Length: 76
Picture: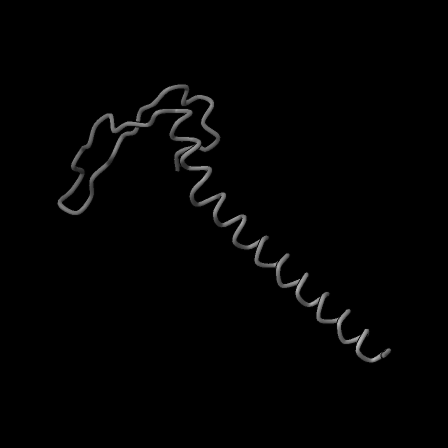
């Protein structure tokens, strides 16, 4: 009886650790790859202001939008 209980407890802990790990990985992945960009798009309503051909292989794309001073990143 004691061995079966010990075995069940360990399997339960392994399952909990596996679920927590996948939640941390996929939860953050889904948030930062899908949820956050969509949220920022609807907050700032991005659009392409202009496109300039710098060289034959390089094109600069200028982005405009609403309240870009509140956008949490910088160009670089």
